[in-house]
Image 1 (cartoon, chains in turn purple, red):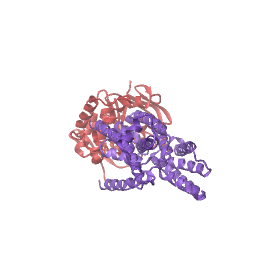
Image 2 (image 1 turned 180 degrees about the vertical axis):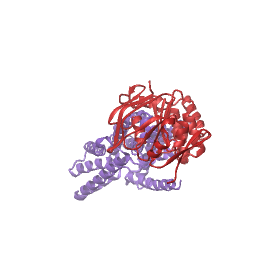
Image 3 (image 1 turned 45 degrees about the vertical axis):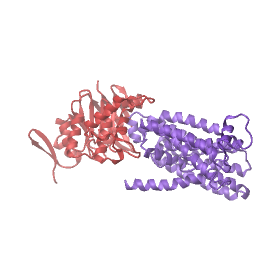
Image 4 (image 1 turned 90 degrees about the vertical axis):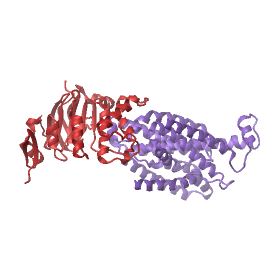
Length: 324
Length: 255
């Protein structure tokens, strides 16, 4: 079966990439060092680089990408546009505003900033939901426009905070805004969110296959539109929030990955969703490994790398679609 | 027992009265035509009968069960609706697009069986798209896309079929093929067609509902209701009838 073998291929590729990323970095490590750090109990010296830094970071990168790609696939069905992005509804803007306010007030612990990001993301999604969902009429266009306008509002709030912040804080704030995995500490949280999200979205997947052919047709085929819309919205927003909490805003992953999977011929959401999960993980892990090696020992925000890959690809796909 | 009926139905949309005190009995084996001018509310009525739009007063009954008490899924197992426009934003194959017609009959964790796929291939054959199963949906012409929508409706296998302009985009050959396919040998199926072509209605339907647009309706057997007088009033255009080999044909008269 072709789709199944494609998913298995992506899973094996993910595993290879995670292992490879342990060797690469500002300090090259030998096979023996990596081996001992993974499988021996008494870890010390350079082995700590693997167990304390590289492995958690690789897993965080993978989980973030997987969350974003899954959220993207869901959001695209919801707003009925294959080029939509999980950040388009302003979820990351709300999270970023909350985190920057926290930084401005002098908070620095990872725990409190993570908590703030999550609260900000929830406030943002609630705001869009209430404003776009009045009187039960919820067209994709209305949802999209509400999200875009609210996102612009968050953008203005972020600019304001940056303007009044002391310059000593600016570097950390900018890194966070551009998407940065060096602050992520809650790998187990990300994987839990990922697993729960994948199970829930798989339960919706056959309904998604019907919904992409239009609201009215889906209704005539027995789908309760209002319920399904709300389920997709909440699920996609929570997945996005979990990703934002890990790594700030990493653009383009959420729209590129599902789009590429569709181009590869996997259009059934029951196989598209797991494939996108692996694909997103692979893309962000590769981008982050590049981000921390290109100008090592300096690190780049991973969002810059995904943008460098994403923008040309987006433009290419638009050109291609226009020719068809 | 009627397959589909309504009692004293009143439908208003944006303050426009579509119908009032409308009572219909549609039985198995019958083919109904809904006729009227653009914007008179034919589509709105059809969507209300399918439960997609609310009605202001009256009841709609499916197999004598009130539509408002059935779940969307239960309705989808009894009533199918061919929409006027097909929305395609996402890629996919014709096979995938038609397979979603099986959705009301499949549990959410089940995959479509080989039997479902066989039904799709048979439906594609019936609408004249034999080799189209693997074609990309976004590359089809308007007429081909319309017939894919018809195949989706066929695999839904409902006793009540509501068809909003089923011959939209179709050439004259396919218009008659489709009307023959839908209206023929259906003793346990009832069809309701929204049509613009009076002659298709006269040829393939046995009952007609005329909607002059003021909330009033005229209904009855085609042989009684489809008269030059009624049709001229309905379309606000002089229409005359000619007989050709025992077949009644309606043509628009020039002023």
